[in-house]
Length: 215
Image 1: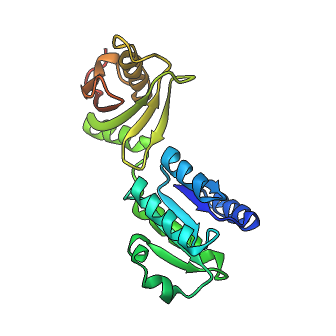
Image 2 (image 1 turned 180 degrees about the vertical axis):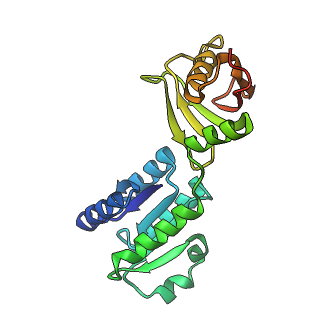
């Protein structure tokens, strides 16, 4: 899971980032509000962990509103060394998932993040191959990224869509054809076993793969 860490204390930010990275989280670091907003808009993290005083409480509150404006589904955890009851009276409290007191055990933050990751987990790409093996056909959402350095299956996104990269440009069906060949190889079926059901002219597609067609 991708986590944005926003704190103007660089030492604390580094320690927190290392701790989360060791636990398997992908961390994005920001030491000021502008950087946090830019990173959130570009990287679309599933969760943000922010210091409420960033460096002032008003800036921290503003950042909470901005992050939820970028993505209303983004989870926000707030770290505070002040009175949590005071923050509880602010309207921004309703936008926040967890309030964690600074100085408490780091395990609390890890526990909450692991719980969040588990609740939002989606099947990995291998799951789709299992369905294909059992059912003979599988239908799924896919996001394709053209003009990539190589053709590859990236994995499953938090939105449940399979992500794939192809080197072709999206012109005259080239990217779609390259995508179908890639999927056929990945799922171990013939090229005719891959069908784009919708989204031929979009990065977001609905795809069906069948092992009943092998040539």
